[in-house]
Length: 241
Image (cartoon, rainbow, N blue to C red):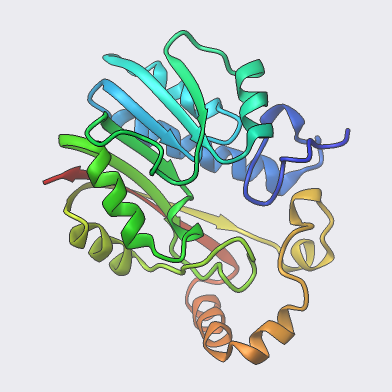
């Protein structure tokens, strides 16, 4: 099976995963668990699922009792076309837009944005956009890797720790109400050999990157010594002050 062109390291198409795609299927389960956590934090009303990909998570959110509408937003027209075909739901609409600037302030009671913040060069600006979109008392659920990822993943712009993410949310006007932690072991051999299609867009010439970014090399070494060969993720539920 040839995976759709919009299936990448950063986006999964569940019905496009090959049977032997170990990393893809493991990552899908992590994403589904995050959406499950997010669903338990929502209080109904209007919900934004920003960076929704092909939309499977938007449908999960739409089934939360009291949710009136889920707006699934993504910058990929191809992914949204797949979403509208394969993940139709009477309480879900999909729209194309970059970040959160295309939406009206005060439009949502909840925002879910999983594995998004690490993609922007100014994460504080994005969190403040989320705060603007939320009604008073609204809920934001967001997740990021809390082990280094910028070195290996060329799509990422920011590394986070648990402390730095929580501080960022506080500065943006949010109060943390719940957290969900995940650990994903990985095989260095499978990654370096790029055996699966999803690993094809990992950073090339990684040693050259470390030579020009020694801080990234030290962060990777320190993380591996502390946590072993694992990727760690944190999903936080925040309430708008």
